[in-house]
Image (cartoon, rainbow, N blue to C red; front, side, top):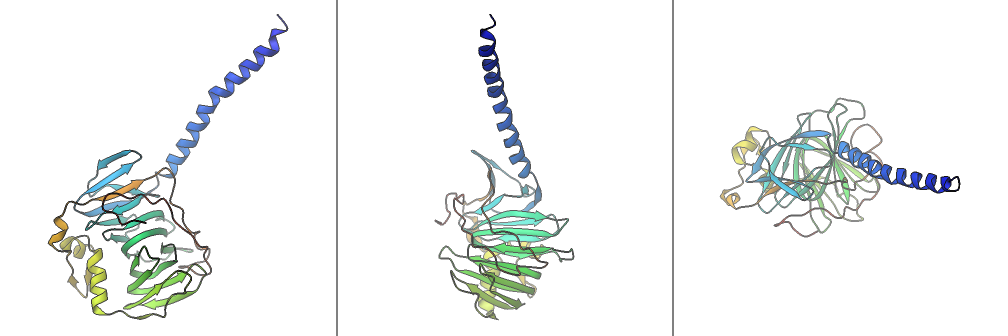
Amino acid sequence: MNARHPAIAVLALAVSVALALPADVAAQEQAAQAAQTQAAGKITAVVPVVNVVRGAQQIPASTSAQVFWGDTINTGHLARARVTLDDGSLLSVGSDSNLTIAKHDAAEQQTDLDLNYGRVRARAAKLVKPNSHFQIRTAVGVAGVVGTEMIVMFETDGTMHVICVEGACRVCDNLGNCVLMKAGEETGVRNNQPPSQPANVTPMNMTQAVNSTASTGAAAGAGGIGAVGGVAIGVGAAVAATVAVVVVRVATKTQSCSAPTSTGVMAGPQPACVRTGVPRTNGQRPM
């Protein structure tokens, strides 16, 4: 009988380990889910349909649907969306766009957005906290608002175009080459090239950029998005097509560049980053 005791002990240990493993896995999953429950804001306007994708599920969402850190706003052809962040900042996402809310800490005023492709117009709340920043990152560079509004466009050919609408904006490539713009100026960044010298944006380019990011004519003007010089820009009757704005909630966050280490927006070199595996829906442009 005594000879059996070691074997029994080993068997009991193996059973205990086997029973403990599911608990460890469950704990890891719960930790991952907890990281995804940090609220960032709400969707406040959509054209014309919004869905929330969680894993294999896709469910309809109202214009008051909440968004969280790690969520991706993924718009189809002619679809638009507006997001009001918890600090009062506004994001107006154009069609055929893919924007990840990597981080939005309203208390510390630290916002990091990843524009994987497409265009977004951002009106940031006034930054008053130490180490605060509001920046939109692409694979080739980073655009940040010093105050208070900008439009960022990133094409699949690796071209980043930034228009400073109000206040001052700073644009840097991934090597830390930066330019500072004032309202009414634009710049561009391409792969392995520093930002171009700021130039005055033409009225046509400004109108087209605003028009392409307006969620709706009336709603955009009322929310401060979609109006330049007091004139609201509508999106046209073509938006009545059946398209969708999709919020994609994934188990792991989109790969992104590291956050800036200094006060303000994008000061100093930034590591290069490449974003792959971006979720797409029908109507999305290829990556």
